[in-house]
Amino acid sequence: MAQSITDYGAFFDEAKKAVQELEELKQREKMLTDLEKQLENSLKAKQKSVADTIAQTVKKRSDEISKSYDSEIGKAQDRLKKVRGKREKAKTQGEKERIAEETQSLIRENEELKGQIKTMFRANHVPGYCASNLYYSLYFTKGIGEMATMLAALLIVFLALPCGIYFLIPNRQTLYLVGIYVAVILIFGGIYVKIGNSTRMKYMDVLKEGRGIRNRIRANKKQMKVITRSIRKDKNETVYNLQKFDDEIAQIEQDLAQAERKKKEALNTFETVTKTIISDEIMGNNRPEIDQIESDLAKTAADLKETQNAAMNKALYITDHFEIYAGKDFMTKERLEALEEIITSGKASNISEAIVVFKSKDYQTGAKE
Image (cartoon, rainbow, N blue to C red; front, side):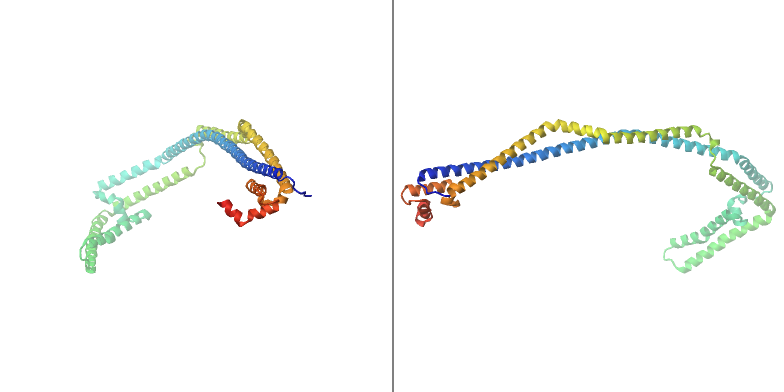
């Protein structure tokens, strides 16, 4: 319960002292609040720095392990590629030798048949060009190959040549193209007929016999293709002596599998054991600093709580002992001194009157002056 004030000097001294103490407590509370926030940020930054260092170190170590194993695995893969290349080359060479051996008699027979044609044509005074592939394609056509040769010759003579000549002529006209075709037909047609008449009618028996020999040569070539295709499709590779390559390939593949397995085991050990050791080491190196920050933060938090409680108690004390008389608006050192001066100078006999005088226009004007 509020009591009458008998000693205004003591009242104002105690009020100013309490207000000053509350202001100091508020300033200390602000300082401790700022310090607590600063320490919290420092702790978070340090913890993040440690976590980043751990993550970077762990990743670097893991990458180094993978890189070391990958380097050895890459070397083994290169060796495997080279050995497989050597094996394929040896197999190809073996197939070539086998093909040459199994087609040797047919090749020899074809050479003999070609020699027979030359001897026969020379003995019967047949022109040499009559033994050519082009001659037989044009006059004794047989088989897809000779038909293709004949078709190509016709396209060149009766299409490419006339059109080429036509497009070289300036001021082209359709009549020119007709004339060119007539000339080409007469010239090349005449040559074709003349050669045919001068050779087929005179040397028909020899040319037919040559045709028969050429057929035998073609049949031998087909047989050689069949043999070649059969050898290349043959899955039995024992005849090529590739065992040493197969043994080396098997050993390298075994080494590769072992390296892959060791890599997997090393990474697994790193993840389950080494990673924890690295984390503990880095954390241990930074633990004193983190502990110090945590200790400072705990002490600051305790001081802040104590200061907040003291400020609350001081504010309640001011409310109970001084604010009930003068009001909250006058709970500052300057206004309390102003009220004290008003009462001391006799302008008012109590606090209520002093407040009225303080708020009066004349007093405010004088205070400003």
